[in-house]
Amino acid sequence: MRLGILTGGGDCPGLNAVIRAVVKTAVMDYGFEVVGFLDGFKGVVEDMAKNLTLEDVSGILPRGGTILGTSNRDNPFKYRTPEGVKDRSEEALNNLSRRGIDLLITVGGDGTQAIALKFAEKGVKIIGIPKTIDNDLGGTDQTFGFDTARTVATEAVDRLHSTAESHHRIMVLEVMGRDAGWIALHAGLAGGADVILIPEIDFSLERAAEAIRRREKMGKRFSIVVVAEGAKIDGKKVYLMKVDDPTQSMRLGGVGRVVATTLQEMVDLEARYTILGHLQRGGSPTPFDRILATRYGYHAVKAAASGESEKLVALRGKDIVLVPLEEAVENPKRVKPDDELVLAAKAIGVSFGDL
Ligand code: F6P
Image (cartoon, rainbow, N blue to C red; front, side, top):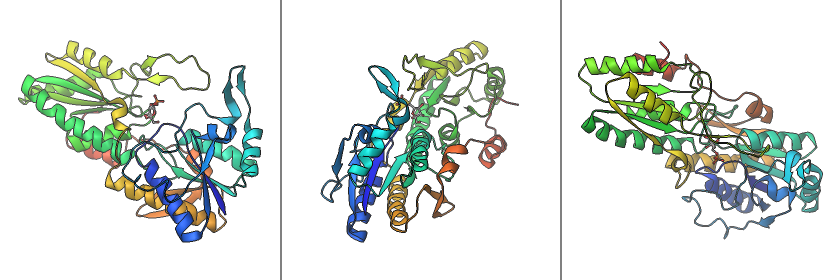
């Protein structure tokens, strides 16, 4: 077989580990060829690709980013051109068949897998691999990249603790999480935050302030707040920059500043905020993500070899299974207000600003 592979959407620690596992399994275990498309679906539309050899993937396991490059503006069905947005999916299909691609492995989050599904409906054989630091893709218990992001965010919470305590301040940490609060929830729990604010749970900052005042009464003259970038203030998300491009999402950021300035006015403590941003996405993956990415890559090739298509390799419990690609796209994973982790956090006194 000749397999194609692309990495789409925002980059994520573990992408190179996936590429390495795909190439090694394909070449060493099955005698397949692998063609890597550059910059996500853009490489399929513009026919930018290269054959991937064992040499190409040597030494990339611990490296962040993706050796193939990626892009956020690469939807072939809504492709950005100087003349406006166009459907270039036919060109993509032609390039795939001209290169003799038997099956395309799409490594990406909801956007990439939604595009992959449209190609599957046009007859392209597809196996998806779930990627995103946000952990918000359906069908799988965990995406690769999430463990690295929560590890970086937890370290940030730990570091903020000592300075918060010394200065008797409120420290607000804004972490990524566009529509889902998984990073905030996990890092908040792992780092011992006092307040966690996420997009899925409506909160009021007055409630959060009450929690901080309660702590003050107990003699705790500092508090740590972890807020997901997609958390809503008065029902609205906070945007950092306007994006004048219909193919791109608006850039989130700044909710941490709003939370810090408002809490400072409500409580008799100074507040500071930190936006962790892309530090959560860059750099080397954790051992967990390296292993998960390797398993996903291996299982994707195995699925391709056994004639599977339109499937996502997914983690369920301890096992890697195949689930329909639609599941990844149609059932995004969100934190439920009665999630066991939320209940555990509340039981140990963490406020979500909702009660
Ligand atoms: O989806 C992953 C993610 O890191 C989100 O948490 C964040 O909102 C977005 O990507 C940022 O994307 P970009 O790097 O394009 O600004």
